[in-house]
Length: 254
Image (cartoon, rainbow, N blue to C red; front, top):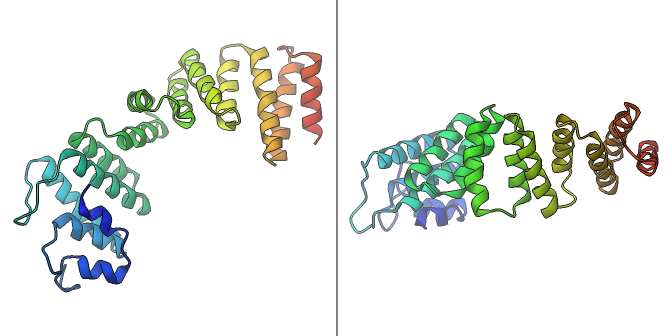
């Protein structure tokens, strides 16, 4: 890992001592600093726009093979540059610039095609942007390496459901629940996927469990909402046993 990442742990006075001079603002350090150290130091010291723009240029140049370094410094590898892209994306999030976050993570994959944080970030970003097929491609690569991550399996299910692939989405939502039985979001999504497949009886069971999760988490309003949803399905003649109806009525009344 590059020394620039260690710089981010320093307090501002120490950072100024270690950072290279920029626009005459800081004095020169004892040893030469890599240009991306200067960019990260700027962002750490509050100059987010200036530092991120500088880092963006450095990374873009590196992707094009235009790298430069002071004598005595080794050439960073692809994974090092990918880490720098991830750090740049962190600062773009602070700047509330989602397009730049995506650009930084895409650039990370040019340096390291297997860079997991980029696949996670791009998968979620593309799904949120209404591009679920692209999101799925990245999330599947991430899930191949993190198959037991319940949030990731839930996100993959969302990308599949957005494409109308409800049976495949159901598999992912159930996988998420198997790994974290109290994951409310996965229960919400599974119930919708089941309803979309006309599996109302199964959906009512999932909704009842969801209402119980909300109640146990101290979210009574959400518990009542979920319970009422289940009762509405039962009243529509879509299944549900007397025992299940009693559970939902009790939760709806709390």
